[in-house]
Structures are given as structure tokens and as C-alpha cells.
Length: 201
Length: 386
Image (cartoon, rainbow over all chains, first blue to last red; front, side, top):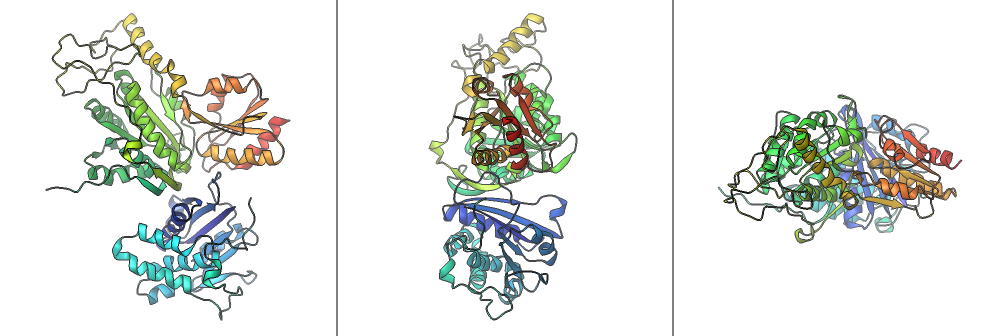
């Protein structure tokens, strides 16, 4: 089973770190294979940029993301640039304050990640709030694996805030909002592949 | 002031960038000197070693350019250190003269070349594989080279360790010919405990520095002279001029033929021992794809897709580009019908394949800028099958 994930935003949002943490969680703490790549060069500075992840149960041959099964958009331009590449039936996840989906957009999940991060006192942890939310709604990697990745990657002084940010995202419920997808209970999806993803390609 | 020493060998599992895996492979191999000039897409090798080498009692020097970088690692190695540099196309070109110096003076050292699109400045941030023949023939004069081609961050680590051992065993410069995709991808890298990391000692002279009759360039039966280091008291003279067993210049045809023939033969006669490759589904293959580096990962996918369509395809992945596994190609040619050689250049390793077979060798070529996707390879596999 091969899953392609693209995290997209603008420089400074911590998109790359979020992707590395999720990949590390899958590869080191959940017994999966994972390859992380990112865009390099001038186009990666300012404007829309992306961090790509392939997660699979067996060895990954071709390492690049071409048709993401999961697209996380934290910036309008990123949504507009990368949405057309998303696989049919893929899962879209957005920062609801920063991305306004096209009227024809199908079901998606949304979280005001940046606003929640501001509520925690630091706007810069918006990426980890989103990582928590994405961990829950994607079901790709268990919560514990991602939390272990946070613990093994971040400086001790930053850890507590980031674990709180992760929990805030993981436990956030968008029910009652306009997002059309019903929210599964947290225990229902942790560690289990989402039923919404496309089969092995 | 005492500085806390960090571990040189980061035993355990990591989620590492390919470039960082080169750096950690070097440290695990005992490399304690890096002289280099940062250049994309190899910069992260230098960046990590600039932080890590001082932590483990090593030396990092940012040189003024790549000519000096290569000279610096040759000097460090003559003084006894395991030494490395890392670069990309334009810097690799500048290193060529001193690479020949290392070959002529038989100084072990390791050069990482993370290939990007060329010629010249080309595509600084984007992938290429067009330095394959430069790796083999880039410096003037006759010499043999060993060049490894990693296809994953784990191999960036493992082959760096191996490169240092091969360099020391044969007293030669060894190349790690990566490409931007492999160097900039992050994957799991497992680092074994220090005692499980293979280590080949540099061959050293049996007698002490007091022996006036000692000949520092007198080879043993394996054609490799034991290496003396500068500053140990031996009478040593290292020169790029043609030299005799004393290390002194002897500028005659016979002396030159004797020396260069030995430099070449010490590798050529052991090529069978150095050559490495990996195979995937070649047992009953009729079409064999020969691919290396990042392109080998696309080729592997293409072979899987071909098999799903009932086409008996297989993959031969040279891990050593040089020496090239030509005998394996010759052997396979007895029972396959065609070879397909995808590479991010306009036909380089395919020329080497052609030397070992009269069967059709079909190239899949792009000058670089993006990783080769599996589809064009699959198309040519289909075409090769007819």
C-alpha cells in the first residue's frame, strides 16, 4: 500500500518540519517505509511551496509524489497550485482561515490551525496543530508515533508547547462547521489507513 | 578548556537526508578532515560536517575553491588522516587535476559528487547524471578509478564507509557519484554499532623510519606500496612527476610505463573484487534494464509494471559505475534479447554497456532537470521486447 501526501503552504509556516516529523514517525516508530522530499531552489522561497511524503508498507521505489492521496493546504496559492494534481477521491485538509476552497470543491476537512496556534500563544506552531489534525483525519500514522517523533526531534524547551499544539489539532472537532465530512472519533482512526485513499498504484 | 566529545558513530535509526548520510558515513569511517567549498546540491554535506567534525576532534576547513579543496584533502591524507570533500559539477571539474595528483602519488581520499544538470553552471538545484564519463576519464593521463553510485540515503552512508576502505586498501582516490534526487531525499538510515562498521587499515611499512634503504614507493606483490606518512621520520618524497621506488623523479619512457602500468593494474587485476551490483527479477528476464542512482528507482518501478503486463523484464543496478560490471553484462547477454539503459544524460553508461554486448542497447535519455519517471522506461522496455 503506497500513500502520497503533499503538505503545501508558504515559506516560514513550517511545512517542511511537519512533513519530516510525519515521515520520521512512519519510518522509525510505526514500522513503515517513508520517503520525504521537498522543492529546492528559488521557487521554494516565498509563494507556494510544498513538502512531499510517500508512506508505504513495503520498500518505496519511485520516491516522488505525483498524484497526492492527501493534500494539506495552509495557504490559498498553495491550494490553487496543487489541488489539480490531487488523486481522485483524495483527502483535502485546509487551514480554514487561510484557504477558501473553490465553489466546486468536494468534501474536505478544515481546521483554523493558525488561529488555534495563536490561542496557544505562538503562531509558529500552526504547522504542528495541523500535523495533529492531519494525523487524526488521515489515520496514516498513530498518534503515539508522531508524538515520539516530536520528542526525538525538538529541543526540550520547545517540546511542551509543541505537544500541546499537536494535541489541540488532534482533538479539534470541525463538526458544526460547514465542512461536509463527519468527524470520526479519535480512537477509530489512529493507526488505521483511511478508507478514502486510492488503492496501490 | 575541555570540550565534550560527541559520538562519532550515531548508532541507531535515523530519518536522514542523503547528504547528511554522506557526512555521517564519513564520520563513522573515521574521516577527521574535510576541506571543501559549498555548492548545491552537495552543500548539506559540508554544512553538517562543519558542525560535526569539531565535535569529534576533527577538522573542517572551508577552502577558497575546489582546486584547493582537493589539494587540502590530499595533504591531510599524506599526513595520515582519512579525508573527504564534497562538490557538484563545476567544482568536480576544478578538482580533476588534483584528482590525478592523488592517483599518481597514490594518496587515498574520498570525493562526493552530487550531480546536477550541466555543462557549466547548468541547473544548480536540479538533478543530472552526466558526470559518469568525467568520473572515469576526467583527469589527464592513464589511471583507474573506483566510483560508487548510491540510490538511497542508506547507501549514501554504507558506500561512504566502503569508499574510505577501498581508498585505503588500494591507495587511490574514490568517488561517490550521487545525484541531486538521492542527496536531497530523506529516508530511514540504520547506523550499526562502531564495532560492526567495516574498517580496512591503510597498509603501513613493516620497518621503522631508521632504515636508510627503505623505498617508499616499492610495491608488494599486490602492486600496492605500504604508505608512509609525512612527519613520521621516513625519508618521503611525494611528486606528481613520474617517479621511481624512492619517490624521486625519473623522467624516462621505461620508468613511466612501469609506474603507470602498476597504477592501472593494481585496480584492473582486482576489478572482480571491487565490482558491485544489485539485480531485480533478472532470473528469467528477456529485457534487462541497466540503471543507477535515482534513475534505478524509476527503473525498478518500470520493471514491476512490465512484469504486471507479462513482459519478462529485469533490472541490473551497477553499484560501482567504475569498475563497470561488464562481465555480468556479457553473461546476461547470452540469454537476454536486449538491454535498456535509462540515464539523465544523452548516452554515457550505455556506451560502456555496448562494449560488452552486440545485442541492441536502447537508451532512455533526458538531459536532466527532473527525476526520470518510470513511464518512458516502460515504453522502451515494451519496444525492446518487440
